[in-house]
Image (cartoon, rainbow, N blue to C red; front, side, top):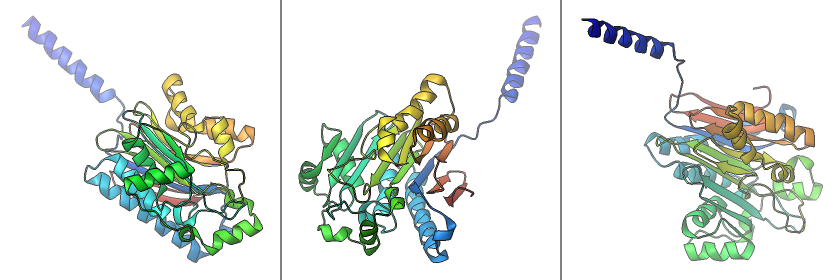
Length: 324
């Protein structure tokens, strides 16, 4: 009888402890995207153009979410989502890539798996329609992490990845931006991070670089740890902004390291890096991130960032300006 009483009390105690534990809103899957950060203000945006951006961000989110809903691999969702943004002239990636000082288009991209820290990246590519697809091929079908220029193009040909004439990347808007060298055009990278139903984190980033850039300049987007990072123990990050600062401060990895070694939440780590360390150094830009529990961060120190997310529970959001 005594034993039964002890077991009963123990059972009640365990139930009470379980009931006192805070409930977590852990998501089965999450997708987060960005279309660049910079001087994005309502006064410079017509309602028609704003709708185009919101519609395209929604289309990209829906593309990746459809894969994740079916239990698909996060890496497939990242690639498919970024391809939508690369194929749109609205963003500085793929079709909408900005021009270098010499009037060329040089595209960069990277992709990373948090499951095994495998990664692939390409830089300075001018004849590949979807650089994110090439970056994934580097990750999965080569022993390397980063290929650049002609070597990356040759690898694309070997892999049967779609190549295009350089005229494909010409858009009047970007050409005029080169002529005027508008500072605001510096920021326009696209990116995607996901948590899939298997609990794996993935990140990808793609960009046309910096308007009017010279000397074969490469920014943070194809640099693992700077513009892109994913680790199942912490988070997946994609960055956008002034690449030199993101490289110097290894922004994407720094956020992960603060979570891993200091126990900070994703939001706390992102704010410390973007709103303090980066801002104090004079660096402009932002990040999107998701952690292993499905918590989302979209942190930026600029007037705006094209961004959005979608979760398994149906929660979703698309935003552009800082005050929304």
